Each structure stands twice: as structure tokens, then as C-alpha cells.
Image 1 (cartoon, rainbow, N blue to C red):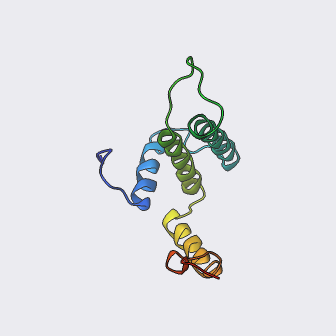
Image 2 (cartoon, one colour):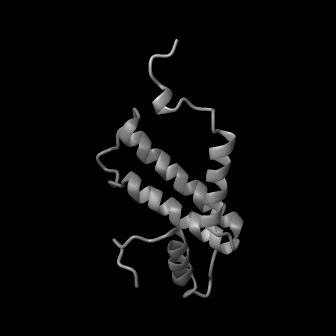
Image 3 (cartoon, rainbow, N blue to C red):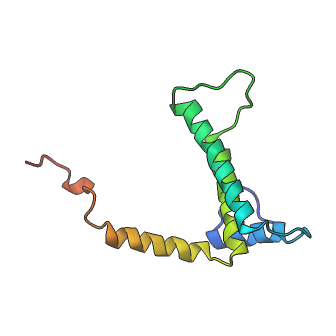
Length: 118
């Protein structure tokens, strides 16, 4: 078993989640159910961000959660969704990074170009 503080690749994370889910008869939820869970977790993240950075502070009676924990929940559900659809998240990330690095190559002002421009 991997120590919770050991570094893990995306592939390692997908395997660890699959090992966990595979021990249960129910297995992965359907893709539609996982989309609902992902949406639910995104709402929880939005609530946490609003508490820390927005105008809506937590009530004293509300449980203390962290943005880190909510991002972890989202990552777990995202891995479950990818695993259930046999998607390699490492490959998916490479595809999207390539897209951004080519499509948006000149879209943003680079720091080294950001001096006094006239």
C-alpha cells in the first residue's frame, strides 16, 4: 500500500482508486451517477471558496472543511469516472496541454514580454 504522503503519478492514482473500488461488488457507479457526484462535489468546492474568498463567511455551526479536501473529493470522483470509461487521465492531460500550448500559444501576454509596452 502506498503511504498517503508518497508521490503518486496520475497512473498510480488511477490504479489505487481502481484497486479500492474493485474490492466491492457494486463497483463503479454509472457515468451519469458519477457526473451527478462530480457536480455535487463542485458545488461543495464552490461553497468553500465562497467562505474563504467571498462575501459569505461560514456559520459557527458549520463543519470546517478545506478547499484541499474538496479538491481531493473532485479528483477521486474524476478518477472513478475516467476508470469506468477506460480513459487514461495521463494521456488526456497530455492532449489538453498540447491543445492549450498550440491553440493559445499567442493568446496571453508572456511575462518576459510584459514590460512597458506602448
